[in-house]
Length: 367
Image 1 (cartoon, rainbow, N blue to C red):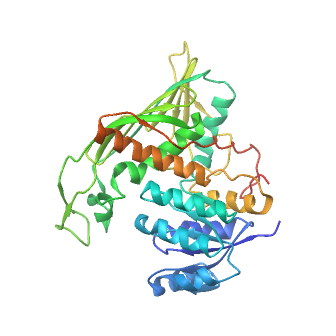
Image 2: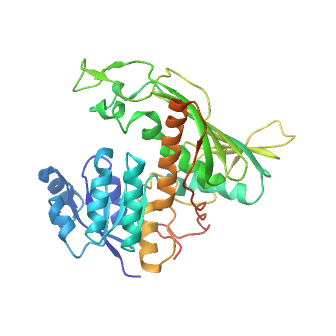
Image 3: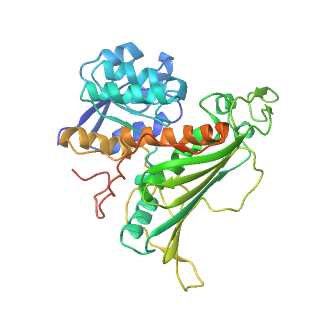
């Protein structure tokens, strides 16, 4: 199958793992990279033997490039996605799809009008850990799914990140930063969501950076930093999610799925591997389940590889635009429900992504 030629826009830290995906997946050929800082793009191209280092305009104008991998900061996601689509290129974007629902919808509308594909992170739900959980559920190992919990709680990025300001600006916060991993995993395991409600607060109006090189600088907090949400799934299951930058310590699990005959402890949805634990009704012990799928190490890029196969075959890719927009609306909905003292009814939906088949060869996907 002919490889898909891709260009990366945004050559920050996350770009290196996507460049590695271009070296591993035969379906994906990364032929160019670009950044507002041309020297950064040039350095990344030299590091991974990428043929061309471009400005953003040059990359978008290159007719050889079929898909743009948009790794810019969240505030630039919508602009770059729209420009790529208008240039006639498919687009795959880091999470979230966009900051606003209006921009997210505009991206999907342009793609539909131009018969182009949109995809987006996270793709961790395609890893061996969560795919094993999906197989357990599909095989009926815990009966009918009744409920789920998801917890992402720690004390904030200012203690370690070199540039933590954007985590506390519009488009940031724990829900928009980490929520996509948890919500995408839940939709993959249970299905789409019909309504949400929640409560949110700004606990500290100002944060002090204790990491280098900005030690001692102050951050004005613009967005809620502790969000508790309730998710009503279309199939009747009920989910609970908490995301927080305000918690100094926690022993809660990352995620659990509760069925009529058992419970699955799901691994961290920001990772690709395990462990996966199951406890059946009547048992007093948790049993570790051997992983049934590959992509157990850091495999960021498997989502764009899956999209590349879809570009060639015409099938639906798993980390698709409908899924990423649905996740975006869920996150907005929880914040809106808190602000308005109501439930928020989702206007969007999506298909539950198809599971990966077992037995795939390394760095390959189904056609």
